[in-house]
Image (cartoon, rainbow, N blue to C red; front, side, top):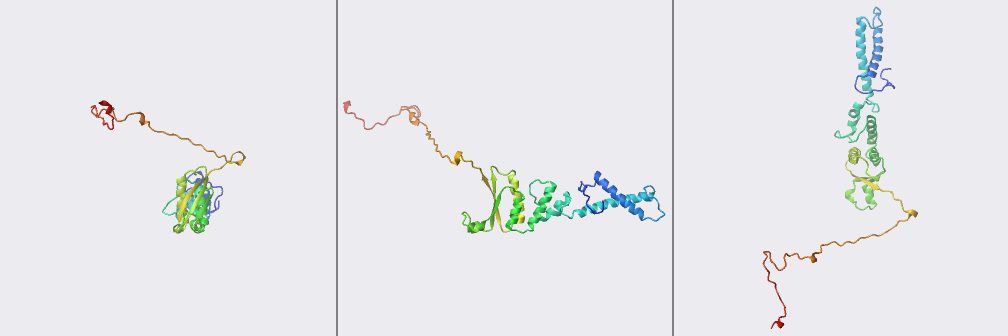
Length: 268
């Protein structure tokens, strides 16, 4: 393969310099360099194969030069973000866009993470505008959602908002049935990205709006019915005497009963 040209049949782009494919590339490149070195020798050096001491030394030099060339080709390839090796994706691209070394707490494979970073760079250079915020949220949410600016809602007379909410916006995500899986990680990821994209003076709120499908009854009519149940639950204390033993005090002595308004006219 020509120097500094990407081999379309190449599979392993790792920084690990070992394996069958890498050894084959080193052998092919070293053979080409070995031939070039032999051509630089005077005509009295006539050996064209490895055998004499000088050819062994040239072959060793060719192998090391081949390794250096292959390493330089990989480094040159890392300059293009679309072909950067996995081990260097974050160090060459991620650190440019993320703050305080914070990464979204979501799982990406190598290719997905590369595409995510490239999309984020394109969004970043569009500026802190509503379209950029919408595109950033769209990196994580596939459901229908809306970006609503508070100052526009205030002008429309939406209740619950006033001048103090001027520099804010809302992200309303419409979901059907249940919340999306990994909700907390999802929200954390959105906040990390929006801290990069949004204007610094703005605040935002993420809200999930649950929607349920409605299937009317036969004929499309709503059947209205009322059902109620009354229950009276209490202790029937009036059936019992709760002050101890009647006509006895706490020590068991007979208690004097207060009598008033008795008619004793028949006693004499």
